[in-house]
Length: 300
Image (cartoon, rainbow, N blue to C red; front, top):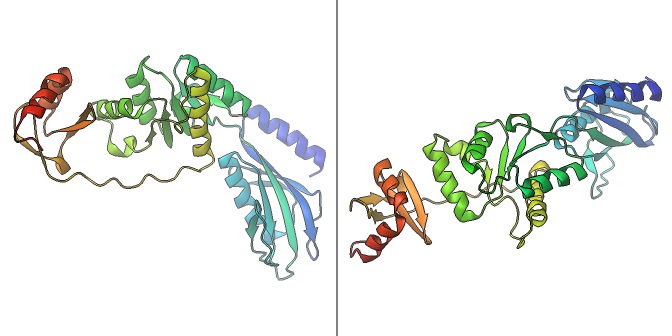
C-alpha cells in the first residue's frame, strides 16, 4: 500500500470510529528488509495493512500496536539483539537469524470513548473540558467507557454511583471525601452491589492537593483518571479484617468484628452490626447510639 492508500484508510477508519494505530519505521540497521519511512496500519483486532518488515517483526509490531491502541498512548519500539537499552524505548528480541535492528514509532488513534463523566455539577463540566483538552473521547453512559468519573457532589450520588458500579467499566472514580465514600459504600451494599464491584471504586478520585474551586477539584480528579488510563494505579493492598468483639449499642449483643454484616463510621468510631435492623436504627439516630456506646462499661 502507498502512503496515499494508508492516509485514505485512516480517514475511513476515523469516519467509522474504528480504533487503529499508524506504525512508522524510524530506524533500520541491515540486514533487514525494512526501510526508514515504511508504514503500516494495525487495527484493534491485529489486522495489519502495509509493510514494516518481514515476518520476524510482524508479530511484535502487531502486539505492541494493539497495546498502544488499548492504552491510547504512543510507543517507541526497538526490535534487536544488540543488547542496547534506552529509557522510553520498548525492547523486543529479533527472531530473525539475520540479527538486524528495527525501530518503530507507533501512534494510536483511540476512536472509542475513554471516559464517562457522570454529573451536572461545575466540577463535572470542568472535568469534561479537561478531558477534551487531553484528547479523550467522552461517552454519555457509563456502559460506554472503560473509566467512569462520578462528579455528582450531592446531586444524585447513589443513583449515579450504582449505575457506574453496575457497568462494565474497569475503574470507577468518585469526587468524594473518604468519610462520604465510606457511607456510599454501605449504601451500595444495601442496594445489592457486591464486594468485587466495590473494589473498582476509587474515592477520593485523585491525590489530596487541597483543591477548593470546581476547576481545581476537576483537575485533581483528572490526575486520578489519567493514572488509571495509563495503568499507573497500584493494586490496593489487602486490608486485614478487624479482630475481637464489639458491643452493638442498639441491642447490646456482642458482635464478632471480623464477620460483621455492616460497619458504620460515626465521629471516627466504627460500629459493627450483624443484622440490617440494628444497622438501620443506628443510621436513623447515630448520636443517640454513640452516646450509649460511650457510656457502656462493656464497650469494645
